[in-house]
Length: 403
Ligand SMILES: Cc1cc2nc3c(=O)[nH]c(=O)nc-3n(C[C@H](O)[C@H](O)[C@H](O)COP(=O)(O)OP(=O)(O)OC[C@H]3O[C@@H](n4cnc5c(N)ncnc54)[C@H](O)[C@@H]3O)c2cc1C
Image 1 (tube, protein in one colour):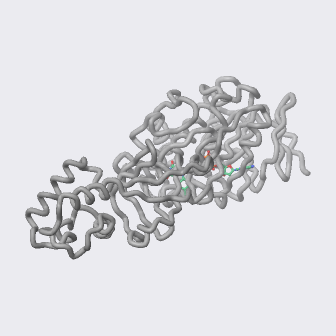
Image 2: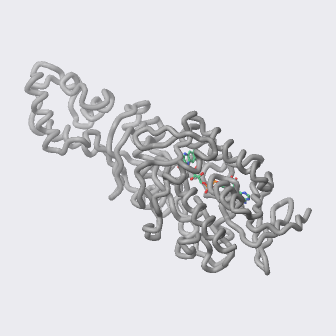
Image 3: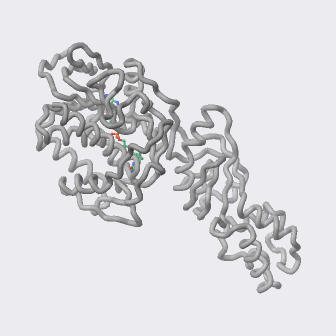
């Protein structure tokens, strides 16, 4: 094994979004920084973000968009800083309804800009170096499968367990345990759900608006039905709760409200109005336009009404049944599509073991944690990259102040 005798001010484990931001901020302040990355390129995960477009932040910020076992009031709104940081790297942004993307619509431009800055600052990057251990004596020794790196401080920015093909490992959790820090339960989040529900035979291929609820969590948006499960924004946003319940083997059904923009009474009146105007029409014709056509067909069959039934033949019980199934359509799920299909890992290194002003371990001074490896996960919409940026910035500010 080669031994690199140089002593770095900071060694960063993981060249993902968080590690790259931290490295740039530290190197700009004159610190000698090195990144050890298991992939053969830095920022590989960034390429897949936002369906290849990189939704890097959101104008709606606040700790209500994040989850953790710990209270999150320390999270500041740094989305403006992140936009400025990327502008300095040449990335112009485009905003769509509060969601920010690079104007190129290409995640690659964000990754390339970070890499260009890393190179311009002369930051040493050890690619294809899987870090296997960190030990602390007078200084830190970071051991990779190829070499040993000596550093005064170390930051673990090794991410979570999601999308293993893009580079993920349990390393951060192992190190937290090694240094007597707690790791919370881990579950896949921002992930589609698996279901064998009979309704998917009818609904597979449908994209329909709805509000998806799971116990007390709910979210509205476009739901995508597939033959083996459901996905889409509202499903992804509540999936973390299903991920944890799957671990605990206490899954419940999800409930979909296809007419979430009306309460039950308003929907009932809407149906009565439609049926009065269309007495000689079939029920499907009278309901046309209320929701996706296949959703209407499925709800009608769940309400035990034949599709060719004339409106004049419907009674009050039929109307109540229609209201019920439009607003409480239950889908049995068998779990999530797992870490490999998830965008983020819920849970992680417990914040109770971290100084939240500095991101430094309370147990092991000089050891920092940033990004997804920590017990913070955001909903869809640029929140996870913003967290990676925010936590890296906090660590950078603290480290720069100390030296
Ligand atoms: C398909 C997909 C789409 C997404 N879209 C968005 C989006 O649009 N907006 C958004 O905000 N978030 C999105 N996310 C989430 C976001 O990408 C992550 O939350 C964010 O990249 C986390 O940054 P990080 O630096 O903490 O971790 P990562 O980006 O995972 O970086 C960690 C790095 O550490 C390396 N590493 C791991 N273990 C070791 C080891 N032992 N030794 C050396 N290196 C190691 C990894 O190879 C990786 O490069 C998406 C995620 C996925 C998978």
